[in-house]
Image 1 (tube, helix red, strand yellow):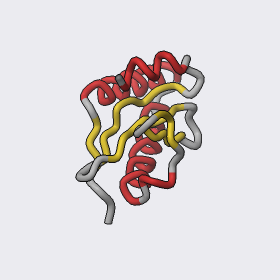
Image 2 (cartoon, rainbow, N blue to C red; image 1 turned 90 degrees about the horizontal axis):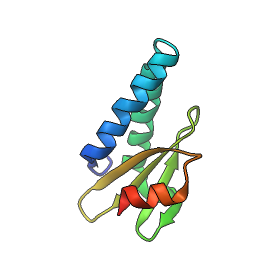
Image 3 (cartoon, one colour; image 1 turned 120 degrees about the horizontal axis):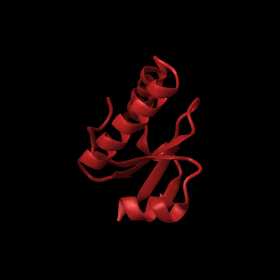
Image 4 (spheres, one colour; image 1 turned 45 degrees about the vertical axis):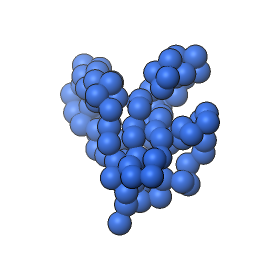
Length: 99
């Protein structure tokens, strides 16, 4: 059984934007992205410490078929997802999103 995973509101907005963008490119692609994202959330909740550190207390998990990273932090009581960001993004952009 995994630890509770919480998605910050800013990350939820990012998810919605990504789904909309993929659906604009090809109908149904947004659903495929979302399904893969949820599967990765389950893996993180079950084994949060297997993923590498991004910075300080933050870790990153990469989606397999989509070039996106999940940036999250493990606390004593939960896992908090701070951002879903394109893997090719400037690291400074990621830093701004998690600060």
